[in-house]
View 1 (cartoon, rainbow, N blue to C red):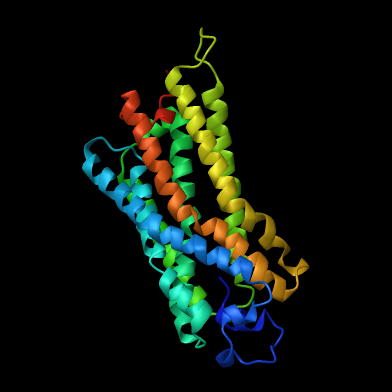
View 2: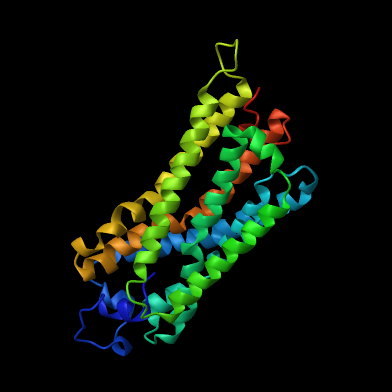
Length: 294
C-alpha cells in the first residue's frame, strides 16, 4: 500500500476536504465496487487462509521426519500469511469508519510484510528448480542449515521494507515494490517454466514420461497459473502508474492489483495441501518434481 500522505491526497493532489473529515471509502464513493470487492477478498483470506495455513504448519510438523527441502520456506510463508490474514477487521474499520491516520501505521506494516511474500515464494521456486534442473548441485546443497540462513536474511529484508513503509514520505518508495514484484515474478516464471521443460522430457529409451512426472507436470503448471493469476495484475499495472490519474489509480487500479495479490494467502496453502496429498498418494517422500531421473 501507499505511504500515509499519498493515501489521503491521491499522490500529490490536495483534496478540498481534510483527511480528518473523510474516510477512504468516502473518497472513493463514486466507485465503491472495487473497494467492496477488495474487502470481500480480504475476509475470504481471513476465513480460509488462517485455518489453511495452520493446517500447513501442523502437517509439516507432523511429517517433519520426511519433510522436503522446501518446507522450511513454506513454514515461514505460512507464518507470514497467518500474520497478514489477521488484519481484515482493522482494515475494514480504517477504510470505512475511521478518519484518523494513526491506525494506518499498523496497517502499513502489515502491508509491507505481505508485499514481500514473493521473496519466500522465489526461494521455494529456486529450491525446486535446483532439484529438477541441477540435481547434482542440489544433492550437495541438501543440508537445511543454509536454507535457514536464507530464510533469516529474507525476514530481515521483509522487516526492513515494512518498517520503511511505515515511516512514509520516502521519495519514490513505491518504486521499490514495483521493482521487487516485477523481479520476483520474472524469476518465478523462469524457475517454473524451466521445471516444466525438464519434466516434459522423457527418460532415455522411453517414449513417454513416468506417471509421477506427468502428475508433477500438471501440478507445476497449476502453480505457474496461480502465480500469474496472483501477481500479474500488479506487475502489469504498477509500472504504468503515471498513465492513470491519481484518483483512478488509488480507488480502482490499486485495490484490484492488491486484491489479486493478497488472495494468494488463501490459494497457496490450499495448493500446498493438494501437493502434499499428491506426493503421499504416489508413495514418494520427496516432492514429485524431484523425481526427474525416473
